[in-house]
Length: 243
Image (cartoon, rainbow, N blue to C red; front, side, top):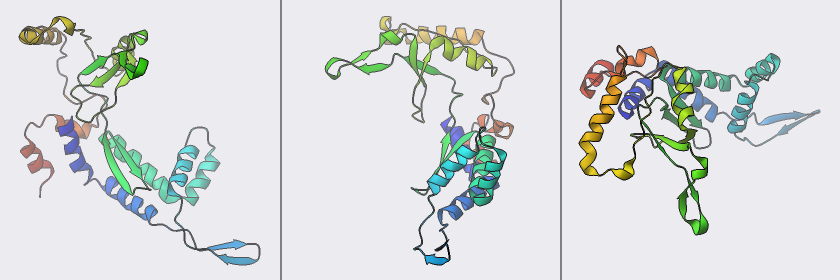
């Protein structure tokens, strides 16, 4: 997944929507309020101050919600057109490339975050709590809730606390995903069992393989399908990122 994400980043940086997003972000970041403010009959001059960009954007998200009226949204959009443009471009990029686009006016940063809910393997472990005198122990009272983490986890994704049945059955079956739950009692194993365990686990997986399926995750943008089938990085560079 990290290899595919790095390929995506190279393509996203050349995407017109992303380029326009960056330009709009810079425009807002450099915007100042008018130095003049009318109060009654007096024209008072104020020092230039930066717009509170974080506050305006937070307001945008609130008025863009389903509970705000069309009149309220239109009023806000007329007043802060660039902010609305930024939001629309963000959604466009995120939907097209299946990534999260994070930006921070205060730090003046734009970040591309991978969307990693479609990992192949997840590992569940009992959640840990702080016991007496700071000793860590398993919280068996929460069983069968487990901290599920993708494996391998190159993006350091935080674990998801979920029931084993809830995790592998209802939500994923709706998207056409097929999961095979396998529980291994590692307390009875050592390195001498490696070959037999690998063989048995793969045999169970092989029994359930779905013919005709690609490596492309469910819901991935169709134009990104080829990113999962290219084996050589050189092939990607030559065909997708010509110099």
